[in-house]
Length: 325
Image (cartoon, rainbow, N blue to C red; front, side, top):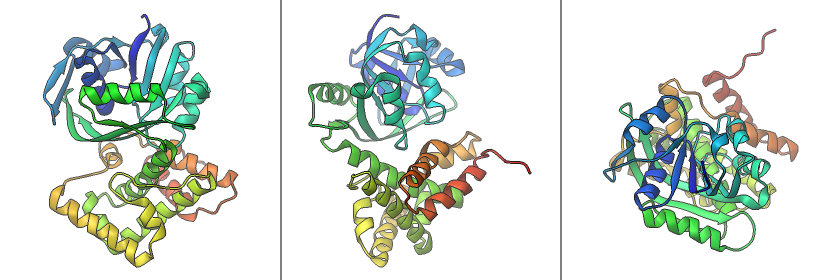
């Protein structure tokens, strides 16, 4: 397999959406996939429905060691097992690598695999769902932000964001991508934790003042962790995390419940993807997200009681390891 323009690691919802749009726009794209999904795409191509309706044939690589190189590698798998998934690609010539996974571990793993200079930060406010038929339901197309982890916006960042945006998936450049990544993570932690523990649609726990306060306090703990890493939270998808960190408890709960009422009116069936995974019997990415945050807090000698307790609880819910007596 020669060098390509875009290699997409993972053929789930987001990987399929990005790959299909780039391929339709004429870019040289390969999907790194395996098993039933790889066979499905090889036979039938990618089918996207919902916000768009398109069917695109696309090359599939089932052995990542065959990839010689890529101008841009997009990691679109769940965070579970990322280090192992990247290992076969270490010898490939990857000029830029970005991950749209949850959590803050992703950039460290990319750096370990390809070197710090290759890593580009990214945050996706794009949603979809892989259906049983193999089609992908494209449900949300707001913004995929790309930026250098340090320093100003560069030509490679503009190229990546420009190509993705012109293909039909909205993308922009960011000059504060670390703040964007931490902010999305703070919002995701609060939403995911309440979603999995309550097993309710999103609006239901957001409209409950007691649950809303727990969510706010989780966001604030992640904000404190980000601050210890010299990053200040900004805005984030769904939740204004910076405002939640600065407001009084009463005002913060009011903000969250107002968002809940808007979701009740406009998207009453909305559920965080982690709850979808739980109900489908798929493993949750707990250790790679909350576990990494808890370990980082301990290294920095920060007290994060809610993060620690939710880490343990969610690990148990998702079937984490049991230590026998």
